[in-house]
Each structure stands twice: as C-alpha cells, then as structure tokens.
Length: 112
Length: 114
Image (cartoon, rainbow over all chains, first blue to last red):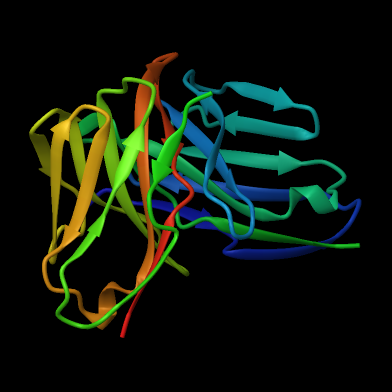
C-alpha cells in the first residue's frame, strides 16, 4: 500500500545548528504538506508545495519538493529552542485527494 | 481562525465500555477526519467523512464507528473499548486550498483504557 516515510525519526541538535528532515513517498504526489506538532500539542499546518522542484521559505525554514514529486525536505537554519517539536509531512492518498497520508514524523530536540 | 473543538481532553475508561469522542468545527468544512496518534507510528486515519451522513473507512477502522448527523459535528465511537485503543485521538477538518486540502486539527483527546 501507499507509504510515506520520514527520516530521521529523532534528531537532537545544539541550538544554532542546522536541521533537515526528509520525506519519501512510495507514489507520486500531487502536493505535499508539512505540519509541526509542539510537545503536548496538535499538528499545525506549515506549508503546502505543489510544483515539481518547488522551493519555499518561511524565515529560517526552507521546504523543497522533489523533481519527481515523490520526496520532500524541510531544512531549518540555525535552530532555536522554539523549533522543538515533531515535524510531519503529508500527501494525498491515491484513493482520494481529500484524504492525506502522514509520514511517521521527525522529532526534533534542541539543546540550549 | 478555524476552530476544531474536541469535547474531552483526557478520558479513562474501562475495558468493554462504549466510548464517545465528540468533535465540532466552526468553519463549515465539508471534510472531517479522525486520526489516531501513537509513538513511532505517526498519524493513522481511522475514518473520514466528506458530507453529512457520509463516511469512509480509513486505514485502521476496526473497533471504531463514526457518526456525522450535522455538518459541523463528527463523532468517533468505540463500541467496546479495549486496552489496545489507548491512544491520542485527533479530530480534524479540511478545506480546499491552493490545489490541496489544508487540514486543521483539534487539540486531541487522550484516551486510556484500563
């Protein structure tokens, strides 16, 4: 069945270091979304990428959608303690564009 | 701002009890979802509804049912709770945006079955 995998599962970084999480889909995606979940909180929508090779930036966060539209990455430059949380990618399922399949998530800890 | 409200944040239920998790959204969204979140497994879709009285099974529907009698309300029902249903349950709604569907989550309901 359709799968969306993320690596790494966990990452600990020193404050100020960069961080990257990678998302890989078993199928081509029409779009990919990223969500952030703070500890004890719920996932919150960050961004959506639609075009092949698309790159979007939100302050220190850079999101990329692969040329084949099967992978994506989120890169955080100079992490801060406020970046702590779990980052999920999500893509529409092959059975319906309203339904999204979520990656397993990358849990980021930032050490001050 | 979109608001998805889950009525119960923390519940403790006994094995075999019937459990209702209620969810209300205030933005007139067509689509509503119930996800389950477990460590290392991410978010898994239990059920999905694209309209009133319409429902569709997700990836892990066994042991669950849903009800959508009104557009703004989507309920998850555990007919006979079991310990392996101890988890965090997330309700969500979505709207079309920019070629996709942006998902808005509630704050989650932590269910412990003893």
